[in-house]
Length: 262
Image (tube, rainbow, N blue to C red; front, side, top):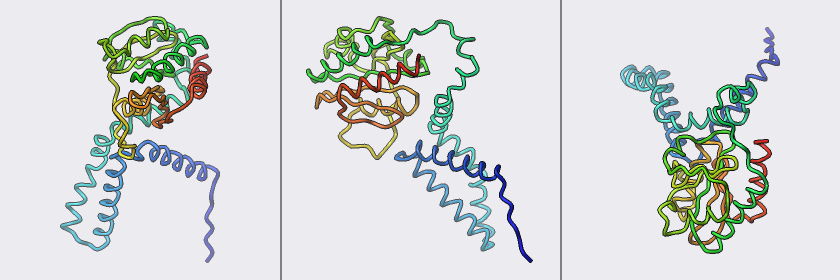
C-alpha cells in the first residue's frame, strides 16, 4: 500500500510563517536571561513527555500540573519580550499609518527634522566627544515615547548644538539621563530609559550604553551615546550597538530616520 503525502501551497506558507515567527522570537530573546528560561522550560517539557511514555503516574501528575500553568507563567516571565515582539510587528509594517489611524487621532502634527537639524545633532555629538562629555540622545521613528518623555523635564525647544551641549554639561541639573528629540524639537531632557537585560554584552559598557540598547529594544527609537571615558560615539538600533562610529555614519543613519518620516 502506497501512501501519498499531499503538500499544498498553504502548508508551505504555514511552515514559512512559523519559521519566521520563531526566528523573530529568537532575535528578541537571544543573549537575555529569558533565553535561558525558555531552554529550561523546553527541557522540562521534554522530560514530561518521557515520564508520560514511561507511565510514571506520580511524577507525571506533578510535572503535568507545572506544564498546565506553563502558558500563564510564560506570559508573566516573557512580558518584556512579548511587548518587544508586538512592537516589532507594529513598527516594521506601520499598520497605524496604512489605515490612517494616526491622522484620525493625532492631536498635533509633529514636524519632521531636516538636514539642518541633523547637522546640529552631529555637531553637538562631535563637540561632546572632543571634550569627553557623556551624552545620551534618543530619536524615535514612529512612536512618540510619551512615557519616557513624562519621566524627564519637558523642554520643547528647537534643536541646536549649543543647547544639546549645555544640557549635558557636567554641572547642569539636566545632564543625567537622556535627551529625547521628537521631529524638529528637543522634547525633554533627564529622561529615564529602560536598561537592557542582555548578559552577552561587553562588561566594560556603562549605564549609558546599556540604556541606549534597552530603549532601542523596547521601542523603535535609535539612541546616540557619547562615551565620557573614550570620547567615542556609538549608536543603538533595534537592540544592537554600533561602536565607535564616524560622524559620516551617524549622519547617514539619522538621514534614514528623516526619509522614514517624510
